[in-house]
Image (tube, rainbow, N blue to C red; front, top):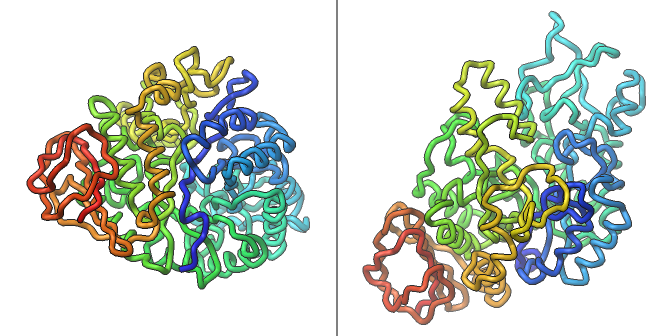
Length: 540
């Protein structure tokens, strides 16, 4: 596998609405991100994945785009976007744009035209279907945001497809004009100097909805190869696809360099381990760490040199990992560091979601009126109508709701955490006076400095980037593995539980690379690991 810059860096995801507000309107913006670039440079990241800042009516917080070549007014101007690109590149930080091309907003000019008549030249830019003989929806496809995936258009007497919100009509990728318009838009951004694309639900663009096929459609990889040749294939850019249904074999189709598609994919097999089998993400079950080990090990070993891993615990759609699988109370700092060490020592490109580096936690709500996320609100109404207990629904929301990740970052202990001088668009977590950037930077033992050290280690040691991976046989709640490269071997050990656990190895310690406790580790024989203890040692 040839080497690329994106294999050796760590990516930091910014959800602009919640990062930093510069003008007091309660909404984070591009100017706010520019103000914090020195902070991100200090952390050591090599790229920013920027959630959508395109023009949007905000039905789904920017993932419903009405103009791909304009900036949402709440976030700033195109001039500020260009300044952001310039200032980031000056600090050797590349900007990876969120590319949402499975669907647009219903306020996009293409869809406005498409609705005018069946003969309109833009009609075929979207997916339309006639009602069944009894006038009902074309088939039983469901929207991710609850209810049918079809919306009736009175004027034309047809349904249009929306796999997400009704205000997010799906594009028809079988139309070559649609694909070309998308490639032109991508080249518009590449010409501005971006570092790549994160591709939202890209596994859906090959859909055959009338055949019931949404993910991994028959022409999906043809489209991606065409996209590669028409846009980013001419440049060394990071491209990562969001692929919820990917297996290692499917991931190789996307990311094997010989196929000329994408750099890597986000796979979510580990993310589903705390939901009941065959049910929705809201149907909770406790995580079994033995299963987590099995899944992450599979992805570390099976891709080989035919693909590249993305490594992540959090993003804008997922709850905070410390609250989800760690302990966000007694062992908040230890569990945050343990998850960080475990992940960042693996092979692949790590992604940090904003606030992860200071140990932000989930934010419990007591009433649905405290929720902002469309998926959460729709699910609540649907489950209530289906007879679910209100308390159980709220419990699921507090565990998995997307607002957990979208609470604004606290930069200091002042009112609204220094995020804004106005009223935040979404309330901060009440613990912001304890968990904020200023406090993290002042404390040399904070979670922030563990992340900073891990990023620097990746820069300094090729074994982390290129080394082989081998799982050790340990107690269920102990995750331990070797990384080996050019005669060097590192041992990674993490106790993923609130209880002490035994660990033993016959290896001799050369020196400690990193750890999340003050304990002296002189021998690896019969250690009693403290709750959430994690360390990495070079072995002799």
